[in-house]
Image (cartoon, rainbow, N blue to C red; front, side, top):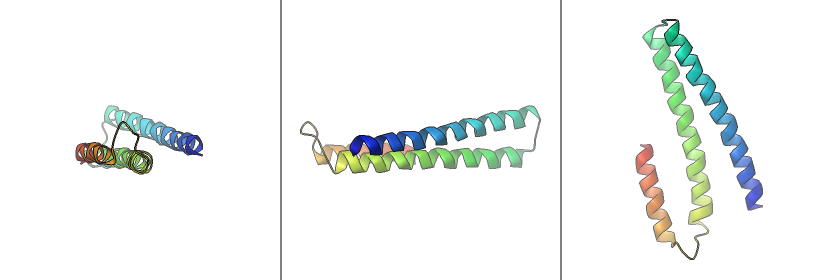
Length: 91
């Protein structure tokens, strides 16, 4: 079951990353076309939001896998500390 969930997560993230790549290409095209700053900034905000959503999916998976099922080599406390560190970088 674990591998199936990971495969589904991987597919979901891959689709989102492909959309994100398209958005970035769109912004580059907008800049080449000298589109207005407001339009470009709106698209950049959408890109940031999309990237954040991908991050949240990965954080959720990390919490389910690493915090709920810590390994013998890593305690739950260490896994939590790593997660807090990662969350600090997302802010």
